[in-house]
Length: 141
Image 1 (tube, helix red, strand yellow):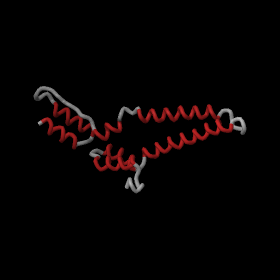
Image 2: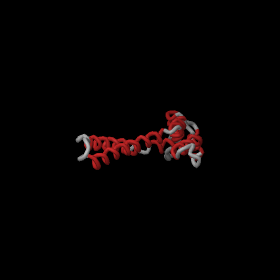
Image 3: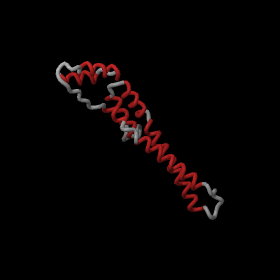
Image 4: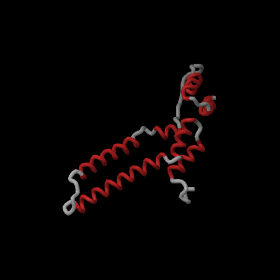
């Protein structure tokens, strides 16, 4: 599908994540990505950059000859800062998407009969997933 141009790389990665998803939250995230959520955001950033570059090039090439507005440069500068902030917010998400997709490695240690399994069961009920609890219990045994 990727080689034939039917799916882009982010959608393909989302499809792989959807196949490997074990929880509802993982499936929802993978489905958003497979449907092009990331691609749309990245395309929007790219289109904005191309548009802003064209405006700056117009100021450089034609500002003295044509009637180019004086505030174009300042407007572009403001929009570039906004775009940079948008990209930075996306990258500074504390890896929430990766953690949701891959899960966390957790060690619950303590003496025998201290309540480790009870804590793990309570945590699993809170997170609304069962599969990882079974894997974790196998490690405890």
